[in-house]
Amino acid sequence: MLRHIVFFVLLFKKACCAMQGPKVNAKFELKPPPYPLNALEPVMSQQTLEFHWGKHHKTYVENLKKQVVGTELDGKTLEEIIVTSYNKGDILPPFNNAAQVWNHDFFWECMKPGGGGEPSGELLELIERDFGSFEKFLAEFKAAAATQFGSGWAWLAYRASKFDAENAENPPSPDEDNKLVVIKSPNAVNPLVWGCYYPLLTIDVWEHAYYLDFQNRRPDYISVFMDKLVSWDAVSSRLEEAKALITST
Amino acid sequence: MAARALFSSKTLARVVRNDAAKPLGVGVAAAAAMHSRGLHVYTLPDLDYDYGALEPAISGEIMQLHHQKHHQTYITNYNKALEQLDAAVAKADSSTVVKLQNAIKFNGGGHINHSIFWKNLAPVREGGGEPPKGSLGWAIDTHFGSFDALIQKVNAEGAALQGSGWVWLGLDKELKRLVVETTANQDPLVTKGPNLVPLLGVDVWEHAYYLQYKNVRPDYLKNIWKVINWKYASEVYEKESS
Image: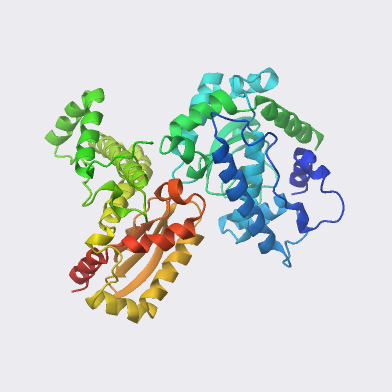
């Protein structure tokens, strides 16, 4: 658990800069995407971001504040609330809002204007090592996103050696560890709850993420996200942070 | 998108089926092959009203996409899964048979649920929104206190449902009582109990309301009652409770 927390502090150091000082609920603020709301046009419309960030994400933040104030979760970090309230799958009320705040913060940083293309450096090497080729990774990631039944998320994550995965229902076997994996998760669930994953990239496949721009055509949204929006810089720097943490502990 | 279709749903459904059959080519052959083995091929049911007939409660654009695209995709994938199931059963490939269950539940459920949903709706001029009379009306008063109390319960459960799913008014045939239940994704009501019969299902997937109501699901839930076809729910109730 301690390892988790150290990792999250590293991973979110940028977000945490503004949050120094006593732990109060004020830290759950609606964090804007690292670009203007019209910056992803025409692929992802300003209208989509106005609703997705300005309404959906905002509502998760507001509801989380209300749910946490005056409870034993008051003063805990977002990541601690997620792991605690996941409660081994028997989720407690704050989980959905806490996880959705985290997921959306993470998702906005997965995109950038003029994104897409191919990763480079060590990230590309690991993708080729663990999926065979970038194309094979792409196919697997797209399939995961397209086949997530109902609302949810698809992820590229680094699965580290098994450690204190107290929330995991089915801990992975050791020979499956220390590699990149594609996984999907329903509704608000994210890989943090399973203990041994370091999320690197995600795509939101709730219908609200794409319905105004693509309606029922989820596969088109997924394709264009990978072709034109994904920020491989962000994914690479998360891999660096994950590695630094894994080797330092 | 700008050109809102005002064709009858019947015409459009026919167009969709033809369009789907042509580029595939193999579609017809596959259907024939399935037929020869006695496998039923599901097709998109027609609506009893035009796409625009539920306005302003539900826009014609939503209805058209919902019926022509979403429901059609569930049917297409359900047929595909059943065909694969048939082949797997023939080969005694148990692992594939088991693996297919998720796709069958999701796509078969999507077909079942939407088929009921279309029947649950009716334009105002055809009685949409008129509260139930007769035995269902009495049963609602008995089990929920009042018709308004039922609506509030359905709206509250529908608003609280995480992600995608359905809210149901069902009849428990065994206990002879009405229940309000929610199901996740496209799980049909019967997954909540083998004796449950759906009288009314409200789709709370975002695709059911997003183009019109955006993130405000409670407004969609508030307005859908204006076009609920209680006549259909009453008929099912009377048939199933006798």
